[in-house]
Image (tube, rainbow, N blue to C red; front, side, top):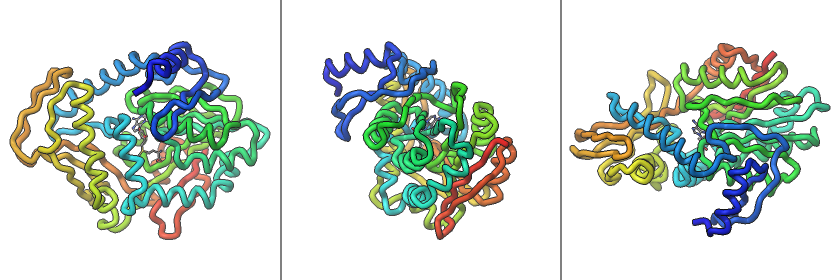
Length: 372
Ligand SMILES: C[S@@+](CC[C@H](N)C(=O)[O-])C[C@H]1O[C@@H](n2cnc3c(N)ncnc32)[C@H](O)[C@@H]1O
């Protein structure tokens, strides 16, 4: 909990549009504030909006989503709903699990090739460089690229975009502590419900869409997201896309169904979140985490399966639901890619592939694509 003094300070910054980020240590203790970029952007649920306004907008989006997804058959919920403070904390734990190879594989590729990636993305070193990261989370790998950016430019800005303000605060803290010379402009935004609107930038923009987040979307949805991103970039700008590749079924299933049950807790947290934020009365003990490999769609699917016949109400969304035993809520897809699939997706929306970097097993790919 924030002390009242911390709350007042944070509120002052958030409500006046002051260009500062709130810093806390890993236990959440307020440590200070860090100066951010010298430009301010108006956003729907921005870091600078008052917290109560932001919460109201989030509640509205949650309500719309449960009214859409839980009435439909089969039932489904959007994966952005995983990411409240607890969901983000659980995701961070997932990234350290032995079964969850994507994060450490992507980090190793970045560590090996960050200079080459920045060189390919930022041809004219005399220009300022802006890194815009979709779904930045805590930016745990981004400093590798920002360090490489600082080796070629002394004017580097970082714009992390995320639906979860708690993760974004940690991202600001990580970057500000490691690289105080980077100018930051965090944006709290749901890029699915409110497509990105970037300020014009007098320099090169490198958009980062890593962590295989694109895999959470169907090919049609992925195209829409990338088209929107494309529309925000200018000639000479680039996108670095991180994608998890098709591999053996057992490795894929284990990555989403770990022995310690952390991914299960992450999946079930959606129900706890609806209890906390929308007055629902889900009994999470009456649902279980289910993972399957859909070889036709080439994706891992996560579901929550009702273990018994049960009634659930979601008061704030005016919903009364009846679940049959084994009925499921589809909560996440994680599409897996091939080289041809990545190229097709990028070229369809107007990017030209300029470089690819992989790990030695070919499990993961980073692709740099430019707007020619
Ligand atoms: C799979 S995690 C990846 C985090 C980080 N990029 C990484 O590579 O570890 C997805 C991140 O995207 C954010 N996110 C998911 N859906 C989003 C949406 N629709 N709009 C904005 N952020 C979203 C989540 O809050 C989370 O931090």
